[in-house]
Amino acid sequence: MKAIFLDRDGILNIEIGNYICSKEDLTMNKGSLEFLKMAISKGYKLIVITNQGGISKGLYSKEILKTIHEKMTTLYKEEGVFFEEIFYCPHHSNIEKCLCRKPHGLMIEKALQKYKLNKNDCFMIGDTERDKQAAESAGIKGYLVASNSSLSPLLHLLA
Ligand SMILES: [Mg+2]
Ligand SMILES: [Zn+2]
Image (cartoon, protein in one colour):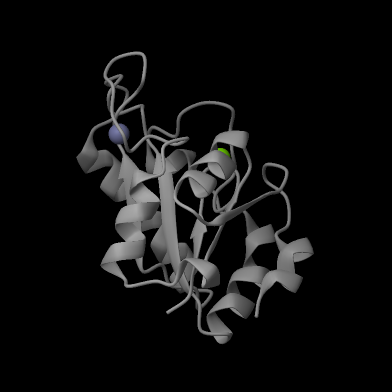
């Protein structure tokens, strides 16, 4: 089974330079659509791997995050794009230590196991160095694009 791991902010939704604290803050990065539709047509599972340290900081609750993710998944579903699961780390390194927050690879490792994925058939897309580090720490390749940009330059990665 093959999968693509996707960072959220700056890849799936517009990075606003601050925490997304409510669903009103979330707008889709439409530059992702061509790539994600093609990935689905080629049989990739799409799995979201996101740091949400705003929870640890008390900026929004897990319940609010759920409504943010419901909005995101609804917007993408309307475009025919389905996410297998959204893994998030609710911790922030200023407040508590954990092994899931990127650049750690634990969220990716959990997903690899849960979905019985073959590392060689998986990769991660993000917009910050820590996304790439998390991928490498889990033993998969990581690719970076600029925040809020198109993923179409990565179409050649789809096997
Ligand atoms: Mg990001
Ligand atoms: Zn964590």
